[in-house]
Length: 498
Image (cartoon, rainbow, N blue to C red; front, side, top):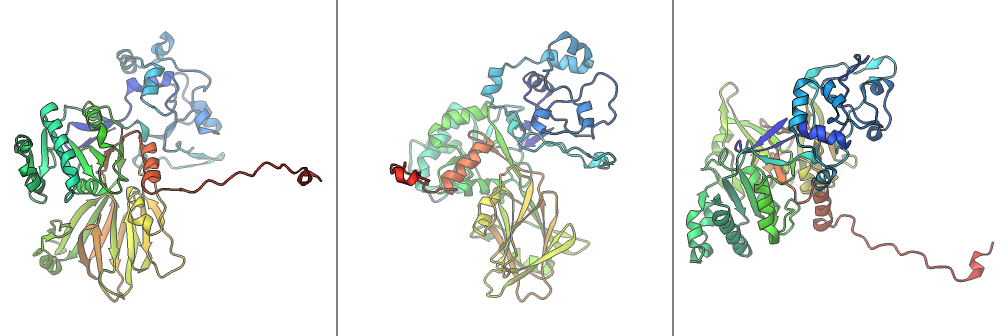
């Protein structure tokens, strides 16, 4: 299974056959059924993973029959095991270099998956799940996701936080390093290139002339950017995500902003970190996005088309559905979609549909539909739980609901959510996407939300687990409390008497 990001030069891939053979020698990956001997009574479902009992805990007798003994190590280098392998498998093992335990330790390969083990599909003596190969999805261990370059990267997009003069020196230093030492083509926003402070710097002028400027909404970057480097806060990563509405190149974010929850890298070590990423030595975390489709009345859409530029971003271009005579707009968001009451003093009243069924109506200030990445943003301020980005889910959080029992909920990532104004609502609503592109929603309009197949591959500084908890502690001061003092030692003997 291979995912491609941006141009076809960057991708992440799961462990191949050679790595699997080496990992099995150290029992660092789930065991697979033995290919020898008679057929077991029950064969695993397509895509079902057979786990080692030491990690899985309890397992059924039928699972024990297809699982190899857990007290032995499968040594793929032994002649006996090689003879039992298929010719294709034997050729893969012979070509693969055997990895030592030291190599695995340096790579920080986990002995367990972040995703839980595949459940046993047999229940009791007679019940089981109906086998349907079309519904099976194989999920890779998130801890094994690493970026790899099919070809050396050549084009780098540098996103700099605007209106911050403190970032001029880091920006100039990074661009000089990328152009003169790494010989890369650097793309920068046109308004950054035309900055008066940069134009006054005569020493930087030769580098400035080599920068490739682009304009949002006019120049298409998809298909020509290999790597994205962000200098600033979380807003720079959200902006980089909005520039790519399909496949997103790997994103490397340096913490030079105010909060920096999504920016794990320190700029002091940028030379080493950037070099490691270019050489393909970096872990990534796939941050899921939401695919949002807004269907609006054609007359209303024509009025909005007159105002293409806003203070907080561009209104996405829409197309007309000739059958329904509706304007359809689609956008991918990284954090959240917010539907609120706007400037009206009345409660917003919107209906929520899940997979075509009416679930509830939200009466309050609005509703937030967010990704796990967005769970630490607006949703957290509205009372939602904070969720690790690798959890496949969609969060639905009401904003100040006029109900004591309306709590935030989490639904599976594959569900489709539809939002429409209730027929008896008193006013229209407003929708925004990652805090940008705000527009009005009328009675005949609808918003359809589901998980996008184009995630944001965010490069990790350490690993996807440590980076997230470090951000919780450093940025949000999660669970910060003065330590409870211990009891003083009892010195009075009378207190111990019965």
